[in-house]
Structures are given as C-alpha cells and as structure tokens.
Amino acid sequence: MSGAPAVRRPYYRRMGRWWQRDPFFRRYMWREATALAVLAYALVLTLGIVCLALGEAAWQVWLAALRSPASLALHAALLAAMVLHTKTWFEIMPKTMPMIFVGERRLAATTITRCGWAAAAIATLALLALAAGWRP
Amino acid sequence: MSSGTSPPARSHAPIFWLLFGAGGMLSALFGPALVFITGIAAPLGIVIPHDLLSYPRVLALSQHWAGKSLLFVIVALFAWHAAHRLLHSLHDLGLRIGPATRLLCYGSASLLTLVSAAGLLALGF
Image (cartoon, rainbow over all chains, first blue to last red; front, side):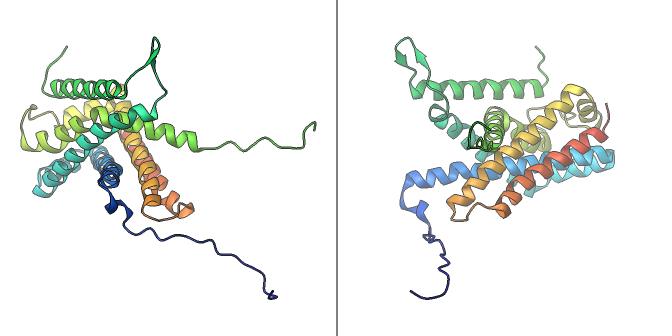
C-alpha cells in the first residue's frame, strides 16, 4: 500500500451516441427535444409581453418580427414540434398517471391516449374558433 | 428526544415534477393552436381577423385580470415544463446534473417567469 491517501475518482462510462442504436431511442430523444420548442415559444411570448409593456411602437416591432420569413420558418418548426409533443404526451400518459379501474378491468392504455388526443383536438378547435371571432 | 434519527429532509423534487406535468398538459392541449395563431395565422393574415393582435386588443387582454393571469400561467408553466425536461435530457446526453446544469435550466425558467411577471404588472390593471 502506498502512503498517499486513496482519493477515488468515480468512474463515468462514456455515453457516445447511444440513441442512434435503436429507433425507439431516437423517438425518445425527439420527444424530449420538443421541450426546446416549448422553451422557445415561452421566450417569444415573454418578448411580446415586454414589447407590449414598452408601448405601441415596440409592439409593432414585435409584430413585424413575427412577419419575417425567419420567424415564419421558426414557427412552422415550433408547430411541428408542438404537435409531436401533443401526440407523445398522451402516448406516455397511461404510464405516468395512476391506474384507473372500470369495474374489475383496468382502463386500457389506448383508451387513455385516445381520450387525451380527443381533448387536445377539442381544445385546439375551441381556441381557433375563439380567435376567429366565434363567441359561445 | 425520543428517537435518535432525525426526520428525512424534504425533497423539493415534487414541486418541479408538478410544474413539469402542469406545463406539459397545458402545452399539449393548447400549444399547437397558440403557435399557429400567434406565429403563423396572425402574421400571414389567415383564418383569424387581422386586428386580433392589434395593440388596443392585446393591451385590453393584458390589462384584464383574467387575460393577465392566463398569459402569465402560459409563459411560466411552458418555461418550467421545458426547463425540467431539458435538465433530464442533459443527463441523457451524458452531462452530470449538478448545480451548474440546474442553474442553467431552472435559472432560464425563473428569468422568463420574472420578466413576464414584471411586464404584465407594469401593464397595469
């Protein structure tokens, strides 16, 4: 034994690109990456709130920025990511929520997923209708 | 003291998971429509009235208590959902979660929360 104190460095296994091994892993990474789009959209809205608080001139700058081709391309990507988030969020919901029993039988995972998708479709249509000027 | 063991320290993890879940649900339900309305339909002038995002209308929305709360909840929950998910994705990429990665993720969400709250409060009621 040596006299030096045994300072152990923990061993960290190198990760590499493990998600490229399997399509399931790739889908998982795309699913998690939708958080980037959610964060980016929160930033866009925060900038909008700041511009609104600064006055009408600043608000027009924000609106003009939204009309730029770069912004439209960004929002097309954000929309695709949001749709993927909606799809996958309700696909994993049966695993993340407590089990539901109807009588003796456990509620099927596909039922929960489809109910989530239906709720999202209704929410989307309601929001679009409200924005388009429809009033209940 | 009747017992030699102290009670276990309370974890703050459930708070972050709750914000993650609430933000994930809100963005799953309304995210696509919101992005389409503000980022595509309004700039291109399709589907929705052209004055939907006009200064007086959005100002009125932001000065109403309900509209103000709605805007704050959307921004804050979206930010905290994303921060929590990205923190765990950094782990998946091989980065060790520590004070620096926590500061980066939760700090970004805190910043967006504080800036949006300040802006909305400055807009008045």
